[in-house]
Amino acid sequence: MSDEADDPSPSVVLSDRQDLPADHAALSDLATRTLLAEGAGPVELSVSLVSEREMADLHARYLDDPEPTDVLSFTMDEEGLLGDVVICPAVASAQNRDLDAELRLLLVHGILHLLGYDHDEEDERRAMWDRQERYAGVRP
Image (tube, rainbow, N blue to C red):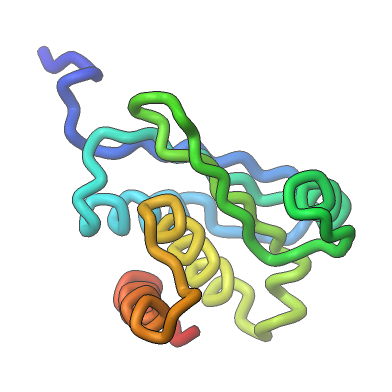
């Protein structure tokens, strides 16, 4: 019998606190596959789908911007906890007619930020966008 602490697979916990349809199983599977492909190991990732109001509150509190955004990533400082990816499907749907594709892209984008990727410099952006497209199957 295997102990959960010995399991090298990542754990994904998804919470949906908004009204638009989202394929929870597909998003959880994508998150797990992305983490495995990046060699993240046995970490826990929290994914939250939130309303525009909740996202605006988070964006204002942490980045001093009162407008809702599409995705935020929050790194955790505890061993075994990678962090939180918070996605606002309402904002995502305004950016792309294919909500499922946009959610996949945003999820992978948020995970890559938690893993240390950034897009401030052109070479960093190119590396991150290549990974996003590979994992999410969507061009940024």
